[in-house]
Image (cartoon, rainbow, N blue to C red; front, side, top):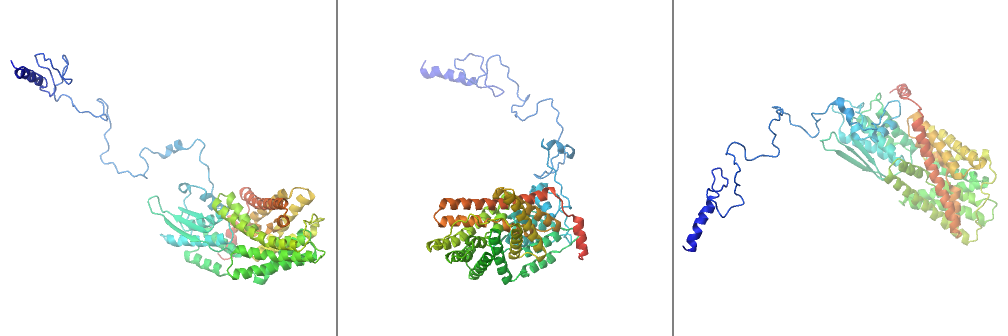
Length: 564
């Protein structure tokens, strides 16, 4: 037999091993020398087709497990709908172990406190608004409400108000017209507010840029009164009426003419020179130098020069008069003359606002404000340092006077502190009804400082911080009693505490190549300035947290008396 004939039966027998009625491979009756790895072993029972499903799933339910059938018509769910297994009675099970902080919002506190509390809460946890200013079912147009809030915030920010208070006012305006899901945002030059009707609606955002700042506390008080009326549930102000009142506030003239502001700057510098030990001649010289500097600054402003150059120019006349008196060998304290002129230029208002923004968490705005203060201070340094340098070159005997203050004269210094606060209030364009109150507050601040520093021999930094805290405490109490801003009652009162003498001695040391002593004095001036700002803010916070002055019932009665 040939090789081909020998291989043929084997191939047929091998193929027969794969034939099986069930489709599986089974061996034939005759033993084959060639087997397949897929062949069924002997003795293994093969199930018949159709008795059990050959294809199973890992998600198939085991036999014997009863499962309730799904409902015939189950509504289509949403990502924002409440789950079917949620029960309001079981909500406490999802409460954190520490509990949820309880927020109390009562109408017995000023609107600033209520709005500030809600701004610090998440949007989803804020209480529902009470749309007291709606006059129809639909309410006013959302863009117009946002625009009104931005315009009010612009006036407040331009007037020197803190960023947190500006946000509270903007939120109060939006909430008064029924827009509760609002998020105001305030930076140094930009105001923005966003409103989202619901989680599935598109938000509406508007912004406004603040390009000019002018301290006008009369306008600031009028804006606060408008926001207070909008927040009151018994004083209904339509949107058109609010726009009309806002236009009147913008058109109002300053309460004091230009010559009164120039005279106030002279009174401020003269009073400051008396505080550091000057006499009548020093008072006159400092006043004349400050008024000349004020007029030069007005001239530079009319020419469109930036404020940096205005401060530089305004600082030169007091320093020049002090150097001239020294060269003339006049029996006066030139240091007191120059120090008095510096008091009229130090940016205490911007410093307090910058530190307040930093303490309340508005770090971008705080950094911008403090940088602005730094630029103003550098401008003052350049102006005074240039005059002092030429004075030293001309032979002026400008030495740090150890007895600059001399023997304390309480009565004279208290009178000077009152005059300084009065002049500062006029320069800030305050309402005439608040000038007397802030003047007395400044006198109290100097009494506290003098009692601690001169009588108690306490460090000037600690004495300044405590006196500034008293200013902030009294100012916040007066503001809460009148439901107004605290700035008109605190800013002018810190005038007697400004570090004018430390600034002068620091500049004088640098001009005489005594850099180490100059930097030491400038560091002391910075420490005093920070003590003032932190003390004012701390006093305000203590007053707001622990004391309750005024009530909503008194406010409503007063408004009804005025005809509201």
